[in-house]
Image 1 (tube, rainbow, N blue to C red):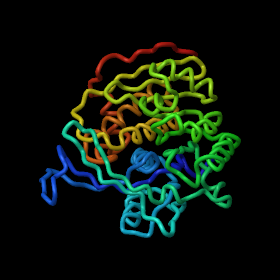
Image 2: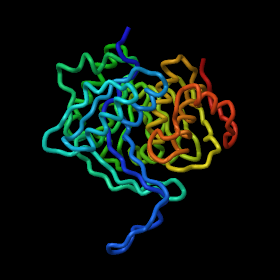
Image 3: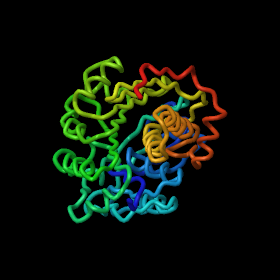
Length: 324
């Protein structure tokens, strides 16, 4: 037995979001927007909250600065019952924070301060607690300056040695970022990048070629989020699925991939098959997109399952190959 269902390690950020934003005012002028909100986001932060909303026992592992944003991030995580005992208070840096300018079509250009995500580390005396989870998720590789590389490689290898399910999400935009990813892949059960990140890392364009590329590098399964085109699942055992997106009105895409991570982990923990797990992950992403800011449209697991039952998708699921 493990203490936690989900340990979410990595990128936690404070977001201030406004919509709709069509332009930045010139000079010192002011433009009016309809909505402003705050959210905990990031490949680890948003995933932690969605997992907690789904009833999982969650441990947050990351960093905050000595500022108002950090205090708010901890308070917000606490509100959802997330264990914040492994959120490190990092001296001399601010909390990772973003100003997000959400466009009318849901796209979200942002101004970001890297902050404490690059300053925290998992200390040896905390490894037992951090890895005491059914699913160990590392989210934000490429931003974790003190953890990226050897420390992350060793932590994921130890998670695998202890029999944990391991998942990985990245912050990557170039082939040079591959050095921070390659050492993690042999100890990663599920690698969950966006299609754009996977293309940037691999130098390839076609999703099936990308799938084979990362399987050859040692990962158990790659799952690529593809926005309005759905998501693609490519497993080492040969199973390949292309799941269409839900047909929704998009408000904001901030945190959609992170919500997908949490939905996917929930499916694994609940013993769902690959199709069911992918569908829950897709629903989590779609619900996230229905409100402003990460997790805004996600409430609980039953509501997500009801959403799946009653919401149209943009075409049929394609089982390209099923094994077992």
